[in-house]
Image 1 (cartoon, rainbow, N blue to C red):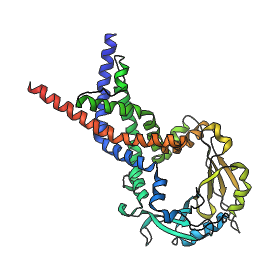
Image 2 (tube, one colour):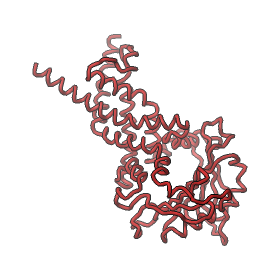
Image 3 (cartoon, one colour):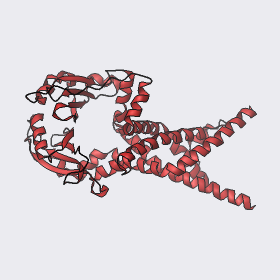
Image 4 (cartoon, rainbow, N blue to C red):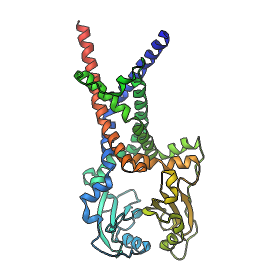
Length: 389
């Protein structure tokens, strides 16, 4: 028993070094990414509050214009050469449709924007607003939410930053797991590691706060960090998932040019049985007019047993053909695991409870960094005093 405890202490010392140097070298980045992540949990509510004129329509009607008319209006208002990639559907009766456009060429157009958003009144199919979401080179000219998004997933370092943050997420996972090893009580005194000791010294309070903040945020942090790896390193993540479970190939755009453009509204109406009772969330576009449109709906009743109640339908923009269903009822275990990544990252899988937990886990990151640095400084000071004695 004594030899086993001695071996565990030696291993613990090794993990302490790993945890310490990961924390000191990367903890500030974890704090930044965690804090911005907490803000982004409520990004839609924040954006709507800050920009009510952009998101809300003055029109009062019960009859929505066809989706195709709104796409034409938005594309006509976009600068030449820009492509629509995303469309946020209204979640309330007085909300606009919000199109997101990007410029596919290397050099930005006169707007000096990397991404633009265009608001379209759903009852008149008229453009009511336009704004820069991501500026091409000046982070201070991003919109408020765009600023936090770029800082969160790329640290304002462009495509290289996306890769760097993905690698950081992997290192953070190692740091969190090493913290769990250090938290684990070797002597079996479990009560000590679950609470902050009352009326403790400053040193003990800091130690307990670091320990408990890490433990109680552990599960959520691991889920958020893992999904962060997926969003920043998608190809590598997919490869790893496919080592355990096959993934359904993504639908491919049509190679046949259509003489008449597809009526997407008609395609959606024909597919209505698949989203009966659901609410439109967003539409994504890829490959231009000959590419794909993915329409995603939430609150599909028949998916309630799967917890995830969202279903996405993939159509060809060239001919309106219904091509694929994406939901937790379809596909392999790997497909369902991939579908969980965004709901876990945002907390939306479990409603307000999940969002609050993700929000708190983000706040825990700067707490862990600050208390970790303080703990390191305390130990250094103690060693110096010991040497003098």
